[in-house]
Length: 422
Image (cartoon, rainbow, N blue to C red):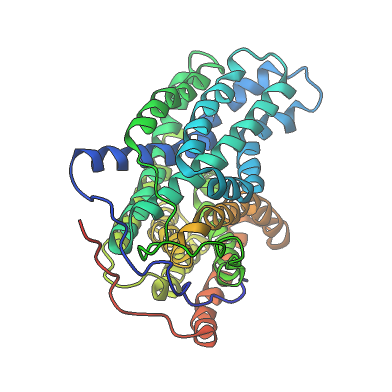
């Protein structure tokens, strides 16, 4: 269970809108590139999932291949979780745009490496390096959204980031399966798409000035002594780690839950997963339309997730399981941008890269441990549905405890978010 959720970062973190146009062709291209960059780590997470059985057959003579081949899918997320905080430090020191372009180019190099590698160990190493570039790309894209926009616009584009990531997961799964019909190496060609993005990012993304969002120049000699807001971030990062487990339970476990109910048709399983993914997008759309600060809504959002888990636990048929998954995913679609917006509100410009890196590490760390936690719960409860039910109870307890934690930490500003200037 997370610790305290302190009040938003005071002073300069989000008190004034960023001077960035929010309309016109340049704005549209800027947003498109940031959303496309944010989808690259999702591509790394799901693209090769459909070809894992073919990889398994190809490397069946390699000792330990049964464990090593799935590692090729999961190791980027682990590398991303471990390295995102360091990427955040580099972002603040070297600049967002420069690191984003370099990481996007290297993403193509490491992502396509399995096309020419014959060693399973080398392929896994290249996948780990993909995770390194993903850490930089995700941290830079999210930080730039925070730099370019504030208030309602920031909420809108962080929600859009969630929508794009959720929708792209389904698209990449289909693309990976289609490309995999021509051989297990073919999906790795898709990683080369980042070679088209990098030059566009270099031309279209402005470099944010090293300024405080109040528009006042920092006092000389004080930037290096200003402490990083650890206290303001620790609670939201702990909550994000837990929230990531809630977020990834349905995508990771839906096929197994359906199988336990006797559904083994891959088409039906794929359709059910797509419906749940669409519900996540719907939740993000609902979040983007909120008129008040998102943080007070977190208990209600977690409660929706808990209700979905409860329905999934009680489901005795596939349709009821899908209904529970849809309820849960509507909640998780609101949960991710709410957590990210809350973290952004605590960060001044000078800290935004490192803070976003810590948040990203917490989220992908929760993603990585999600199947392990549910596996342990399944062993304890005797069924995967039982483990999901326990997670639902814990989610409800967290939702119920957050208001009391917030009251102890201080009142959250419930005024409408400031509207940015055009």
